Length: 299
Image (cartoon, rainbow, N blue to C red; front, side, top):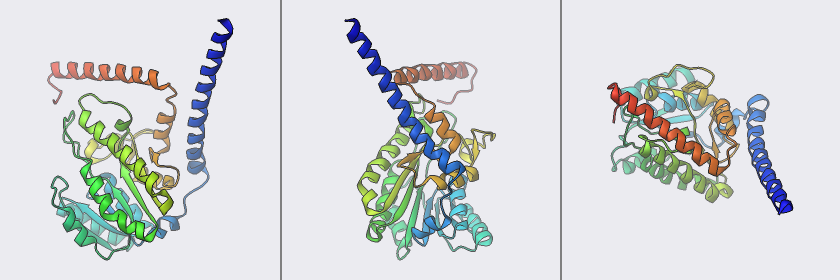
């Protein structure tokens, strides 16, 4: 009995060491890329002449539009607010000299994709940034985030497949990694984006197409009401520049070195992790209860 128990604990210890080793190897890639090896600018341009960015009017989408234009690509900006699109397009053309096309489209509608497809005809599209998302209030109960990723990917992926090259970045969120009470639809939709992206990458990797999902934590954007920036909370420009350096690192990344530290630092086995998530969920609900009592919560 004593020998069996000893062997059991040895097995558990080896399993924990293996989990730590896998996480350490994954994290070491980010350290190497962050401090020593920068992805050549020519890599992104080699994907194709044009990049398509959804949700390009402000925030992360606008930052991707500028950065890809700076790296020599022409960009197609898609968003629902025409004035924002026109202003962003003028800024990009003036600052970078790249060609810019704009497509006004409301992703809450289902009948926009044929129109978008017509506007994209004839363009050699090498990069797609799926960035559409909404956070309408502090404690929302419903969100938009799945149909647009599927439809836009279907629209562009077939052309990438024919050219045997392309890059698709699907912007998810750190909330995809944990259950979030009161954000149930949002966190679930973001988790869907993760699963969808990783499944597609398995299908298309051998065809020369990179499909990566990004799960960042706090980014200061209009959607997050311009959170104060610090070592953890990044500006959209900081996040985008860093994330583009990690596009060849795997099918999922936080897109940001400091955010990757937060994820890699979680060494809980799955069963313990579920317990921790349950405690966090209860804590979140308790905080909301206090806020409700004080009249601050939005349900």
